[in-house]
Length: 290
Length: 247
Image 1: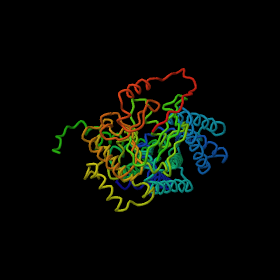
Image 2: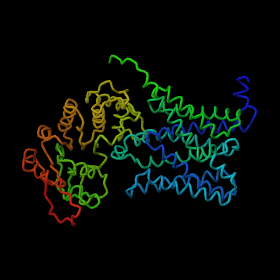
Image 3: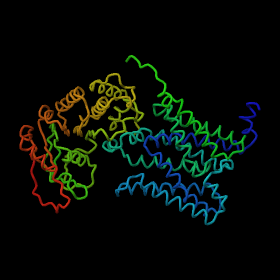
Image 4: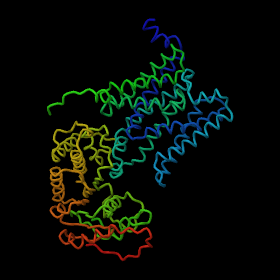
């Protein structure tokens, strides 16, 4: 099989492959940098919790729209995700529970509620769609939504880059100089939620967070400065989308899991050979003079 | 002038520090001394407006909390965050540059001068993750230099810092004092306090002494302070202690 036939022809021949490619590229561009920030804030698992928290909102959107309607489910997902984030914030500020503990409690409730709602009305096929995504069945409307979310994310990150980083690095300092830290924290959580919603359109609620955390982990292994981490995370997310789609096309695998497993493979390779990876520690090199 | 009037800060109704009254004069250089658990950091946090369970009044005069330069205990900051030394120092110019403004050439120049002043000339492009604990503390002092604050509050700035770094940073504190800024620092080393700090507030969950250092750090007061700090009573009733006036 020629290079063209194996790597380019599937996208030329099939509209659904083109749409899937554009969706996963847009998703990677936005979600990668957001994942890097999540990881630097030591909130990796909060991202995971949030991805489950969007489920009941999506399910209610599903019920109201009477079927798989991506805008209705997306809006519901944003509302549900933000509510869990807000409640967790309030609980951790007013009680003895830390933020991760309150996130854990709320997202479990949220997940259970979501599955309950979907199972009340939908068939099992629908539940599978919500949980595992439908990247090969993306319509132009969903594509616009994912594209809009990616654009908004990159614009927002560019705009609030400094306060966001300052809040991330030393929240006490930002508070002391009157920098409205909580506002940026909330804005950041909003970005996390909308990117998860974009992710669940394509990869499903269970794996949406994979496009965030795996590229972020890969980026941390390759880069030492923030801008490079952002570029690296976006690049590896987009690359995983491209390769994952091709592999799923040629081998007949489900596309969502294949994309995530491609990212995982990239991650495993990085673990070994990246500058901050494992092999560097095993190979003894003479130290420098000064 | 920062005036404290009968300030009490509690955790679960137990006072971490109570009935503190007195004032920090403008341009004064005060050490806050006392053993672990004496309420030193708690008092500083209350003055920075970070705690909610504060009784009594803290009058900051015509200053706002954001006019204060505050250096919390080192453990509060992620030292391996991927940020350059220059970027970290320039955060000190937040009040001029703000969240969205560009860093002017003047700010960049001041950051470089601040790094020279703390003995880190040429470190601008280094990762903060590659610095030692002492070097990182120097970076935080450079950030404070950029903040140009009228009141500077330091919480245990020399814990786990070697003698030479401490010496250099004490010189900066002395410079702030000469520039008539108000400096308040939590310290453990009484010799350091005696050598560099004209004023001392000795705490042991209440004020043991507040005034000129030689009058406060007497053998009697130090013994008294030691006994008081350990005096935590789970069965304590509601406090009716009289207000102890500071200087």
